[in-house]
Amino acid sequence: MDKLSSNTNLKIENQSVQQETVVTRQIKRIRDYQQISLYKDVNPLDWEDWHWQLKNRIRTKEELAEVIKLTPEEGEGLKKASGRLSLSITPYWAALMDPEDANCPFRRQAVPVAQEWIISPHEMVDPCAEDRDSPAPHLVHRYPDRVLLLATEHCAMYCRHCTRRRLVGEHQELKSASRFDQAIEYIKSNKKVRDVLISGGDPFILEDEEIESLIERIRSISHVELLRIGTRIPVSLPQRITEKLVLMLKKYSPLWVSIHFNHPKEISKRCKIACEMLADAGMPLGSQTVLLKGINDRPYIMKRLVHELIKIRVRPYYIYQCDPVRGTQHFRTPVATGINIVEKLRGYTSGYAVPTYVIDGPGGGGKIPIGPNYILSQAKGKYVLRNYKGKIYTYLE
Image (tube, rainbow, N blue to C red):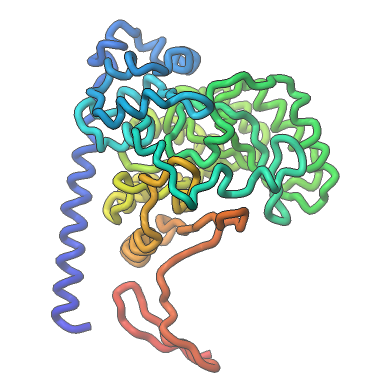
């Protein structure tokens, strides 16, 4: 590599360090919840009660206006926020929002904006074709050896980029355990299924007994080897991760937990405690991140996120290109943005901290890995490769 290229790389690395320092400072600036008028009289015991958090979620424009200074775009979005993907923000998450900055990642993910009602022609109601690949109610079977079980349509908080916005929201849901009978019978009858992912909505929003009943039924199926839970609760409502819940989950080991993280600021002290409780109980933790314009689409932000995740024993697993679901055009980045992020991670940080960047093939194609091209050319028995610094190497078979 020539001197000019070396100087350029050094410049980029120095800039990255400066940017990471700014992010670190920002992470520390968090309001105490009692500084917010809506919560000034709430005692700590209530604040730590996850049932209280759910009961007191922000659902109206008037409540939200006591927490943040609304912009015209947010005000317009709130007028239209109704139906399945309604406004719902936990007090915990609300306290993390910057009251002045509309670009705050907590606000951007939770507060509706007018752009949600600008629909792009290529956006879809069900971009992953989950409804098409549903052989039984609440079940999606796309890959040969694994299925997705949708345990609930409710979440603690409704993310505005949600790919299942056609399903989730505040509406009546059948609570009977029998609603999963057909899904369980399907899994029992299909011997190829060795992996079950319980997701939703968010399964951890259910009561302990409901979660255990479902896990117990799946665990009783002899050919199911791997059981996973997909959740955002440790991020949006960490108070829900109680000692009682963790002890119950531990009984059904091995149990893997995939957690949805999008920004390093989400890894608060309270979030760390929740993740540590799960990890200490022997549950392997992985993270799934959606690439979001203006939130985490800079390499230095994603690098800070994966570093913070590794520190709390959460393995960065996937970065998803934001699905072309209706109303999310303002969140999507070019694919080149995701490739550039992986390029800036690979070789510049621990391999354990480098997630796989994937696009969920629209129309039900499944996860397709996308990344930088390190093979420059190939011929019989010969590969010409480049490394993360751009140096060229030849590998002979």
